[in-house]
Length: 544
Ligand code: GLC
Image (tube, rainbow, N blue to C red; front, side, top):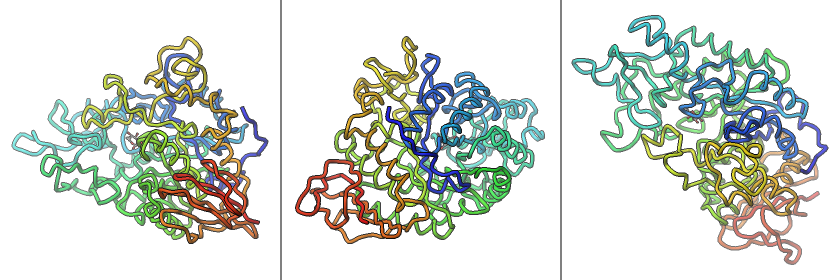
């Protein structure tokens, strides 16, 4: 393993503004006890790897007590660790080690819904219609002469109706799986409970929260119909996500919740932060989640959704940067996460997809703001497209045929036998099988190999950390005149100019006049006083 002596990126309270955050999908990162499932001790053992990679913080997906219907996004106890992942003591030991290594820890907070196994929901079922226990959730009577139809036309994000009927005839709302009943965020006990959950983890030392479905907690008054559904038009309501308004998402009142959370975060020392997983109709509405009295960041999913063209990237970058200027908080970039097809595959898969993914990473990491990496992207992992159906666990799979399992396959660390060092020798089979082709993509297989994706990430993150022009308060993006389908922009600190060039065209381009190459996603060949940048490649160059 390569060791760096670089100190933690920043000890300042606004560390998150430029942080590179590594998303750990806990189930699939590292398995310390050989049961085929990743765990907190596994993360703890691999912290030096993440420190050496050069990230500033980790975001851990939910590791709380859960029946694991939706991979832990169905939380039964917000203040405990599921035995599958370890114990609270393991968490404490892990965060202590992380902090010693200069790594911060962000945990996932799932406030929109609980698990149906949560004590509140079992109490609600037992207590019956009209009870105070039911008031914490969204129970309603059905339509039709006998209440046999759902209260409205809302659809679950995972397919099918968003309502399930219980034995006494009432229905309850679940925007996701029936095992994830939505909470009633107009109920003071719900608000008080989550403020307490925030404090519970802040007291344990977490540096921040990733807020799950941050746009979802408030539903429009009266629960009005959307007006169309898959049954009536063939169009799923979820297709409006990020494009239109739905009565169950992005309601103005949701911002009151964050205005109540912010003083809690601010009351702790060391710069505690929160990042929103929010989907809104426009970038302007997304930006409303971010600001000095709300959350610190919101993922720019438009960047993730951009297609492989210069126009597409430039448009989303410009819009996101403009919006972040308006709200005074840097943009939060992301290319992959546990819900989306890995970007190697989105950009075409195979050799082409990998080339583009590597170039896109250089693009992302040169932009002002914070960047979130998804575990395994530093290895160039593709989506696993051929998982056997019977092994798929995503609850959406049965209802829609769409499955997010292919981006959740356990990481390959070392060795010649699957699952390639994910667990100790002699472990049980990993919860999803690792493809044989990943042997060559393991951490050990790529470490020290010039040109490997892992070494590209290590080199890029090292430069990003040290380079004055990439510092958060350095100059913004200046677009440069470049050929068609070529993106070129510079960032400046004093006399030093760093230029990032991405070739999205079908032919190599000559890059000249930008100075010395610092890092490139593919081999540059010298030509005259400049260099040829291959197709689907990116480079950072420096002029002083
Ligand atoms: C978020 C999570 C996703 C989960 C859903 C329901 O979108 O990222 O994995 O299924 O919320 O909690």
